[in-house]
Image 1: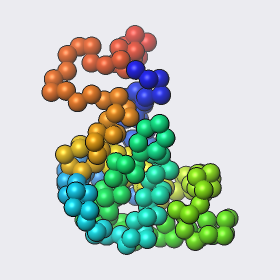
Image 2: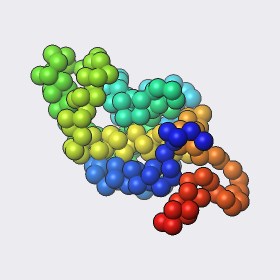
Image 3: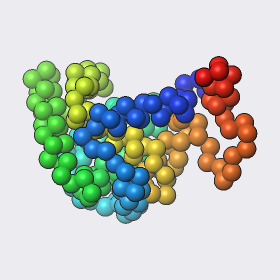
Image 4: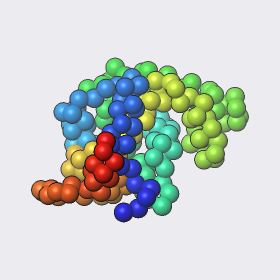
Length: 193
């Protein structure tokens, strides 16, 4: 196993922190419904239902910095933007305006810092610096939460296209698991934790 893979426990802790500081908390049925509709939108190359194309490009650029493409595919390849659009256009539509306001604040900060009105046109380093400056805001934590949910959701519901998220964390989809369940559980038990 590659050493850069997150342990299951670390991933769950990180996801819990992201959810706790988010404007949106999604139930499992909400995530599954959003994923299913997002999968249909991806396969049909459908238009976005809640976001305009410029907004979608900005939210996609933010998600791409949260889970970037490097040695492994990231949020862009997993189609996370369709999941985000679906969530903001359906059961959590009341959060669309606060998310738009957060995006507008981010764009205003980018304009004052770098002289550009769009986040997506900044260099990766500038994007990272700008996101680091808003890391404690509800807007950023919501974006992180939605990006994680879209990246690691069940593939048949639209997230995690081509199992990209699962491959990233070393999860193997098996019908039945037999002990030992995985290297992370064995390591955790060996440490006596």
